[in-house]
Image (cartoon, rainbow, N blue to C red; front, side, top):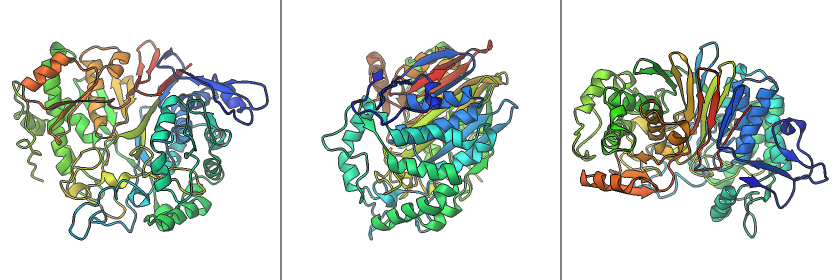
Length: 571
């Protein structure tokens, strides 16, 4: 894919970008091109993300002596500019790293409920859910964590922060050519951008957007410059904080100066577990549900002969669907912010408990979610993911989100960034589904300062204690099942990374009791699954899984999902 803008940027991009394959003309009002690479083989370092310009920003940092963390920070900041539907300053996420010195790190920069939030804030006087209130407008926004997250792992980087943020500032200030997919997304949301903004944002365009148009974001550039000059305080205090609070006051949101100033990212103990002895997985703990669901699902299939069953056979899909059902039933009852709710995490991923859960598996017929509940214990879809890896062996896997596409659809007036709608990820009423159909209960109820449960599952895999895979995906509640299936495809079915990433995926999350399959799923298999008793529904793309694979000889393979504008870069 090659994109040429119809309206060119006003000046040449800096040398930092000319180092990373941007084609910049020498004429006044330069025109630049970029393209999306779906696979690359390299030796020195790789970045795979949702947008070519963000991947190139990360690679530029490695070329200037930075490591995988430098690349991750530059990529994350660039995504906040070039991928406004999910890249963000106004959202949050999770950072997972395995450093070359064998140190494992996880950072939780998930959004928090404002201090003025309460568990019934989206219900009417009769305790009925008010439709859309937890999804649209600033009342749906939690306190953003992305900027605090970046500064919490900056200590593992090498380059000055001013250098890491420069690509994002330049892309916001000078503009970039949008892709066809971005133009379509912006056009689809024009009415919402008008409805939920008191100050018209730059994302509204009379006559609509088209591929190649240049998106210039001057307000966002000024916000990024305040962060460059003042660090995290340049976001959580001062002018940017004033703009956020004034936006809340205009649109009846809850985030206050106190909420912003008191926000902190949190380093947590990683979830580290083995699979079939040789593989060690490192992933995010709660409030990421993936830190429970991924070990649950892998351990429930660990003693099954998946290799013999094969890829997309009736036996393998049936088995994997049922363990997804069992895991998501537990998610609904037990999972939430561990700082606010006592989650029986060790029990949920223990072999005795999971062996007991598998007693409900019938190899001959589909399960029933009305019968299968959470086990007895006595004690998104618009996200973005990126991976980085350097030749020293540093691995970084990061997933960030606004929750829904463009979050709550409100741009902070004068600051230029969308706010999240993560409050919808709480259980706004026990048993009531969120926008992704997931239900929850007391464990994930709204409370002031609490972090909402997430599906984001950034993951690193070691093989015999050496880096093997760095992966993750967006996709709401489909995230963990997509990571699970990608791992099984590579480890058990011996599939190539491009096939594991791009072949049709499927998803079951307990409720609704439906097996979702992507377009392109084998028709005969769908027919046989229905004969087993499954309600099967074909749907559009499931996630966009991006993967870096490291080979024993030092080769690095980066693969970007064909489902989006995702891009793999390396050198």
